[in-house]
Amino acid sequence: MSDARLGKKWNEIKPRTSLQEHGFSFEDIKKWRTNERDAGRPYGLRDFYQAHDLCFECGSRGVQMIGLDESDIPLWEICDKCGGAGKPFYHGPDLPDTRK
Ligand SMILES: [Zn+2]
Image (cartoon, rainbow, N blue to C red; front, side, top):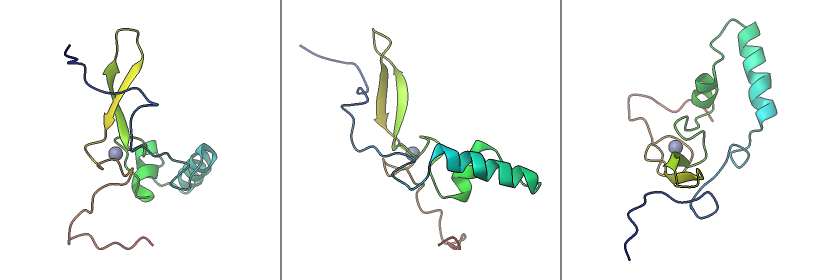
């Protein structure tokens, strides 16, 4: 009895986190993007994640969807960019952390 399937269902996979657990709501994203757009700065979704030190690869969920199972249920794995933290790894000594 071998199960070669990769990935887990959403309610099975841990650790996972969320935008909300990092202190942001979707409303915050909208407001931020509107402000940045009006100020003439980059206002993409990726820009939001970068500006707030959140992992864009997994949408700060700590897990990434890697595919679907045979019933089209999404399957997830721990994000290999942030290791499940929802925040990027330390960028290195060349980039001092000027954000809080
Ligand atoms: Zn991630």
